[in-house]
Length: 343
Image 1: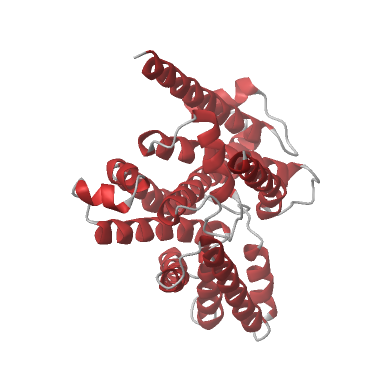
Image 2: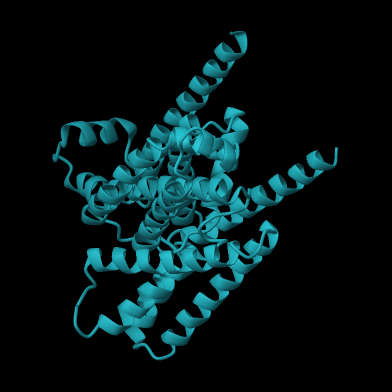
């Protein structure tokens, strides 16, 4: 009873901390930039839509707010996708970027962009998302095809990385035959960024991501049973084949959506679920799913702020910042895990 109460208190404190950080990240993102806006003005403009100061109003509603909310939605999606893949493969460094899923989405998007630029002045959002999803599914299916023949998870991750390299090579090959304007757009997109994110992109991303998150949350019990072993899950009535298909589809949808709207962003899907496990001291999906999404949102918003302001007016790609922060975290986690196993 005491342990349950302690766990509940810990969960509550973690979620409260993440909620405070989320609100702080919103204010910090809106306040920071070439034009400083006071907290009082931020609250007034957001909650009352007061347009007495047109410059501040336009900066908040047309530039900074849609961008940071897009970063929040997509950062949460990427983190949750990583959690699902780590659960599926039972491997702590499984993630959309490592397994080549993001690179597959990138390859298909490059093909569609280059092939249809002459037909469309701008590629429709629906076509972008579908292309990214098909690329993600192709990479995922290739990894799964090898997983049936290879039991060593370390080797499976190496295969995922090789698939990623192959997809990147195909993308680079196609870029050689693209027009100059297409090359600029693809290069800018392929580095991962949220610049230019507007309300239309945010709405489309939210329509895809949020229902998927809800669907994943309803799978909490089967995920919890699956984490304890396939035999145990089957004894509880879980249809393993259907469950695996759902995990693949949901993780692919989430990672494809991120790639479609912001480009391939690395390490969030690997590092953030581990950060949540350390804070919560549990692997319960009922707690981990919302925590991973919320923590991924905060992490991505902070990384986007750093990318936007560290060397202003020059803007870094958010993928550069997430790699610089996420890679050391993953290295530390792997070393700590090995030391613990040896003890």
